[in-house]
Length: 114
Image (cartoon, rainbow, N blue to C red):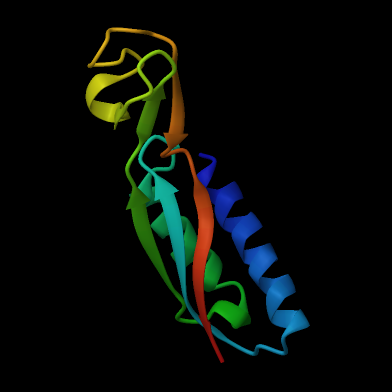
């Protein structure tokens, strides 16, 4: 379960940011999570709730997830398409020369703090 590692890393990053900005409480955090990132949303939310109980800076802090669609580009016809629906084969020209553009992210988008 790498979700606990992700939560730990995000919380450490936020703790550092809070210290630099004299923040005493973080009310909510929004993460952008790509649909092919491998992050299991229910597990990351459970890990978040568990870790919030252990760190005063995050008491009652809400984690919001925004799922980003996975989009792939074809190197031959240069068109983009939804990765989950079509996989690695371009639905327009049948090429397998494709690259993931978005959908593998796990980034902090927004922080609400006091």
